[in-house]
Length: 394
Image (cartoon, rainbow, N blue to C red; front, top):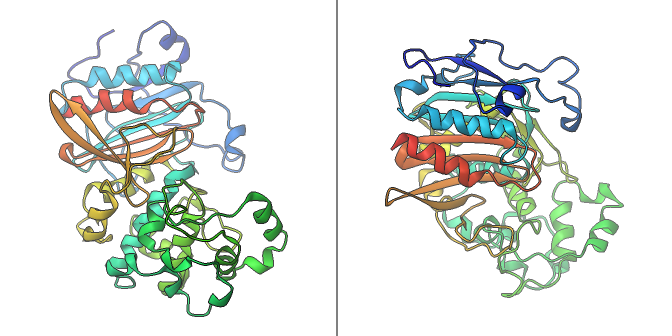
């Protein structure tokens, strides 16, 4: 079914229509909002939407996002609509939203299954990219320097008892931790035993316990290893150097500046915000911090994140070796990179990535930010999304 070429429309796509390979062009303004009950229930208890919501001309919701019209910036709208149809049909798994921003304007917005426009949901490990941005903000504000990235991480904590540290702790730096090479090794049984007394892990006591109970830090242990408490180390440094502590700094210097009010951020056992998971945002607000990746750390003309830091953070520093990470992916400071080939041209994509299909993707050469949210165990949508969306904006 062809879409009317002279009209930017909001589409409501029913599952039954999609199953017959058709897309409805019924006008609809009922963007999915969370009911009072849905605002408090677990994500996993959220009922699926009866109908998908697809808008090629998103509405201005007064949330700081500038909106536009997909039809005015690409002649390949049909390919993106087909991608949405495939998402709703489950071709790539279980996904909940797809949003596209081009040249600073939200031009495509779609929700499926468990998504609601006003409901913040889990970022999983995409939270790590936010933690990286916060380091860049601390540098921009003068609380850290680029040289500090290579200083022993223990030097940020003057009141710790270094006599109890395992050997090699001085080898750990922010640079190493941000690239998953801190080298901490603590077996799960030891972690369980330590966490039986959570009062002994509040604040800096947590990092003291980590440095006491790890195995020795060696060149071998500092090979790339995803997770491994690296995000905990980074958040502890942030908390140590910024005025008012990490939680207040994140609110005032990142979220308030982006106009993000509807969010949740989990507290870790130390009482600090989690650095590697646990943040919840709406899909629209994910676009906002994605724009920081795209625009060298600027938001609405103001430099929030150090550009020099972001240049490093979005570079290919490490080749991640985990088998679940595609071979083409490289890793910077908690941010991934991959190259996309289109018509014999190479485009660099930087992205945050969280389990289940949480993506904030920026492609600077095309002035694009793409947000995807999902709850899919296999998480296989990225190639299809990039190979569909990017060519539409060449």
